[in-house]
Picture 1 (spheres, rainbow, N blue to C red):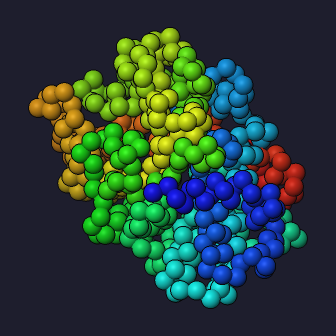
Picture 2 (picture 1 turned 120 degrees about the vertical axis):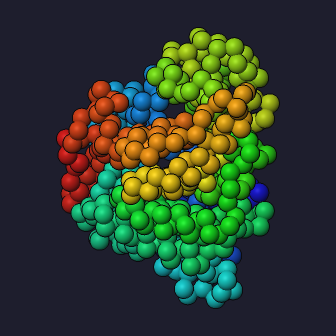
Picture 3 (picture 1 turned 90 degrees about the vertical axis):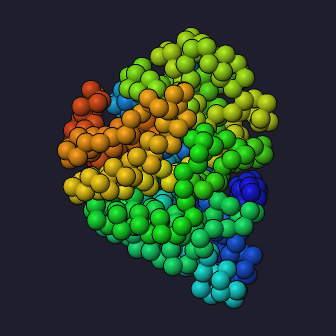
Length: 475
């Protein structure tokens, strides 16, 4: 199941003499490498590497989605000053995490462009070639989606670009959204519904449709959201797991609820999920405690909602083999998702829990949100109830827990869907971006500055390299 990412680890370790060591935005000299079907497989495998929440990647996407939101505050020992800056909205273009994230995602884009450029000339099985091409389109779309979430307008490269053509202005986010959807459509035409067990983790047709739906969600094209959600549902292969926690356990991952799941493995090769260490309380051996749950978020749950205890660790609960105490966090609460007991991994920084970038539960909540925005309460309530019903069934007393939402007042229904996203998707790296796209970040985040903090600053290092770049407003 993790075979693909074993290969990625090996590629990462030998990349000092390979493709990934090249200038990520320059012309990649792959002429002597990219000749066979095996070469093509290796090249597309390498395009997955920047996705990982590994210690080597320093992928701080989680910090933008969580630390900047009202669900979490930064903890730890103060060694990551950038996290403290994110929490207080004092970050600047020189905050390290932005430069790392920009370079990481453009490295992925460059690898995808390399595959798309070189693949047509390779003599190989047509089905295999189409699948690899589809993966490259999807991954490029995903990397660009992340970049637009974090930075807004960014530079758009859709081909292998020589150094003398790299210094170009940013492209408007709306135009990048169009490219993302076009890439998702191209991917969906080429990708299978699913993969064999040895290839689980590769992009699928459902993932491509879902990313297009999410892109339309961000552009508030509600009709298109419903169209692409319909495409996902019509594939007939997705559904909610009966047990919510099965989405966050090693042996029940990649299940029917998984639409796009980023694979991690405990191999001591740099392909593990470092959230297992970064989010673990620093009161526990090898924990860094870089994210602590706010009292506000804990209190916002209905006390009968079992997702609270599934998401948040609190006093006297079992906490991955130890008993959690109030002193484990400055807020008295810590996240539980993506964490494992010490006995399950060989080292804390290489956790086995995948990052579920898109779960089917979220797809249903996109449907509910779009239907509510369009004034279609029956459709919105039906999708919303599927998500709540699963949670209700796991409550200690399902007969009284989480009653169905019944309002047909449009704004009340929109608010109900928004609340459900927070409870269902807590600590899955969506919250800050949701607050921004809903236009309510200032209401929830006192330090937030309207007209500035909707996006993060372009890294100063990139502006120094490319004088055509213009800094985002306010920075």
